[in-house]
Amino acid sequence: MRHPSPHPARQHDQHSTRSAGRRRPRGFTIVELLAVIGTITVLLGLLMAGLQAARRSGRSTVEMNQLRQLHMASTAYTGSNADRFMPGYLSDEVQSRWRLRYKYEGGGRVASRLARYYPWRLLSYVDWSYETMLGYSPNSEIVEEVPRNGDQNTISAGGIEVSDNPWFGYNAYYVGGWWEINANNNPSMKYANGTWDQTAGSGEIIPTSGKLVLQTEGRATDPTTLVLFAGATRRDPGVFREDTEFAPGAPWATPHRLADTLVWDISINARQPAPEAGFATVVFGQGSVFESPDPGPVLFGQGTGISIRVFVPEAIPYRRLASTVSLVNVGGNTEAVSIGDLTDQRRWINAAHDGIQTPRDFSHTEN
Image 1 (cartoon, helix red, strand yellow):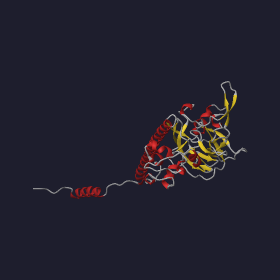
Image 2: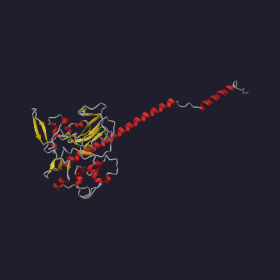
Image 3: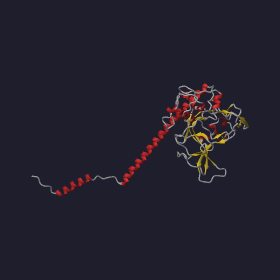
C-alpha cells in the first residue's frame, strides 16, 4: 500500500518554485549591456581602421607599380632618343617648328594641344596602358572614354584628361626642359641660361650660367634622390590642409622655389600674432614650417596637422594617400616621402648640389 507524502504542501511549493525559476530567466543589467555595446564599438573601430590601413596599403602598392611603369617607359624613350630625357613641355609652336608628330593607339595624329605635356609622348612606351595615366580616378568609365584613334583636329574630353590630368607629374622644369618660342622667334628651353652661384672645393664662389636642366641621366649627381615623377595637382594661391584622394592630377610638378620665386611651402596654424616679417620659420623634419596667424579656410583635411601654402598658381606635389607623396626618382627607385623632404631643392634641381646656398634656399635667375 502506498502512503501519501508526509509533506505534500512543501513538495508543491518546491515544484512551483522550480517552475517559476524556469519561466523567469535572469536578463542583462544596464551596465552589462553598455559594456557589451562598448566592446563591440571598439572592435568595429579597430576593424575599420585595419580595413582602411589595408586599403591605403593596397592603393600605395598600385601607385608604386604605376610609377615603376612610368620610369621604365621614360628609360625606353631616352634609349630611342639619343639618351636624352623627353621634354617636359612643348608649346604648339615648338611642335610645329620641329615637325613633331604623335600617334593614337589605333592610328591618326594626336593634336598639338594634347601633346604639350608628356602623357601622349609616353603612352606607346607603356603599351597604351591608360590606367597608368588615369587609374586614380573614381570614374571607372574614364579609361574607356579615351579615344583610340583620331586626327589632328580631334580634341576630346578623354584626350584632355590624359594630357592635362594624369596620375603623376613630371619634373618638367628641371628634367627634359620646358620649351617655348622666345622673343627671337626661336625654340628656347626655360632656364637654359639661368645664372646661379656655384661653390668650388676651395670655397671659391663661381658665377655659373646654365647647367640647371638635366638632359641625360649620366649627368645626374644623385639619381637616387632626384625626382622624375611625383604625385601632383594644380593649385591656386591659398592654404590647403591636404588632401583628397581623387583630386585631378597634373602633368608636371614644381619645387617649392622655381627660379627665384617661392611657389609653395609648408604652414601650420598659429594663434599668436605673426612677426613683422610675416612668417616665423620652425624646423619640421628636413624642411621648414611657416606659422601664420590666419591661414584662411581649410579646404581639404586628412588630419596631418600640416598645410600647404601656395603663393602662385602652379602644379605642386600632392599627398594623394595618407601624409606622403609617392614618387619615382631618376635612378628608378620609388619612395613615399613627406612634403617637408621635398623642400630640399636637391630633390628637384641637379645643380642644387653645387650651389652656395643651403639646399632648401637654392635659387637662380630666369635667364
